[in-house]
Image 1 (cartoon, rainbow, N blue to C red):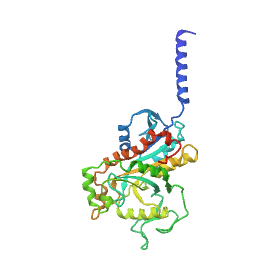
Image 2: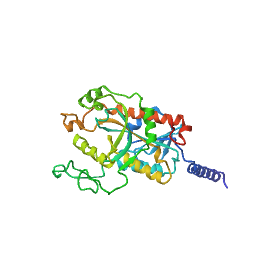
Image 3: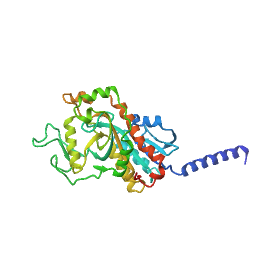
Image 4: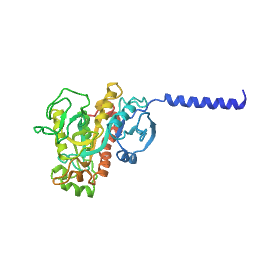
Length: 340
């Protein structure tokens, strides 16, 4: 064999072996995987954490094709916005084989609308229930029967307030209560960011929570691809949440992804790839979900209320209180949520 052919053969062999080693590499085993939905939610994590590893995952959003990880086994993904993106991206990651998620804790951390009866701009809320507010019958409110309380009807039902046996299996998810309480306990006293604009804007709302300072609490979250807004829709959604959860649920935040994300994670758990009781769900208030008394709904929807940046920063601050405890005390967390 000539020298040139020998060199070519060695280069081909080297290339072959490197690809083989890469393909055979053991999957990463994150202690915590943070799930965000768009760039401003991911930005505080990227600014504060040292992500040294980038993992390409086929099937993620073209806008966010990689999962970022630190040497401390904290990983971060961004799904892109909406139900379809969330379900597709999380499913792709779970099924990719590039991660061992059997002991991983998941933190869904994002922003959303907030009910002024339960929170305010910049407030942070850990969810017990996630309810899909899009799986509904809807009629034009100008045509709804006179005796209907709203134009929203549970799938398979004949009128608002009526329950139905028609189920998709994704209408309601309940998060693990032990992890929920631990997450709240770790983060309840975290100082929350605020803004002068938000302080001024929230004075429009008479509700104590709405015009008060941002705080951390436990309540529920409502999912819908439709970015609805206004007090009448909100009241109808409140009734739907109560109906769907047998009176146990009280939504305080609204968003566009969580039931899809939880569906993908539940499928992964059913396949033995992860533990569904290791999921925490956090949403912070970037805007109110309805107008203030005397305010035009359109003006309310487009208002610059000052809550956006504080909400993105507070999602990190509050979420970090949980993730840092897990990473720092992994020996205690590895077998389940610590009791103390």
